[in-house]
Image 1 (cartoon, rainbow over the protein chains, first blue to last red):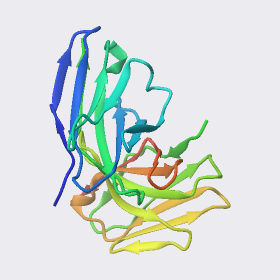
Image 2 (tube, each protein chain N blue to C red; image 1 turned 180 degrees about the horizontal axis):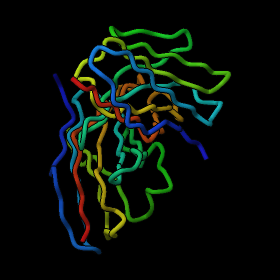
Image 3 (cartoon, each protein chain N blue to C red; image 1 turned 60 degrees about the horizontal axis):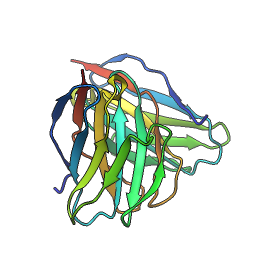
Length: 112
Length: 112
């Protein structure tokens, strides 16, 4: 069964450092998303991406965040200068545009 | 602010019992509704969509009451493998531009 894959599974970084979280969406999906979940809290929408453009972003997705699809398979989330409050599980998701989203297993980001 | 509210539980239920969860949502313009399940420290996985007419998938039945802005999930003949957190999810976006709003989840433990 095709799946969304994310790397790394864990990322530890120092405050102020840049991190790039990587995702390989399901191959025939065209719509891509990032969500995050702070420990013990709700899953929160960050950004949606289609046709090499951001479709929508949340208030969380400020200037420190960016997304990119650098080639035909990868979809990345970059945080330019990490803050302590960026510590969370980051989930990538992809879909065909039929409202069914498939989530990757997540990258646990710890900012020290 | 658009919210999805759920009783966090925990619900501790003997194997074989029937259990029901409820959820309310604040955005009356929402069109699409889902139940996801999330195992501990894992990604959300789509369990089922929720339709106005009510829908069933095996032991699972979902209902939507648009007038009351209320969604329910019924699990019959519960199995140990049903132990998870059940997330009520509303799509605040559109097809292909999904912007899922998640509830905090209801934790279910099935007791042997």
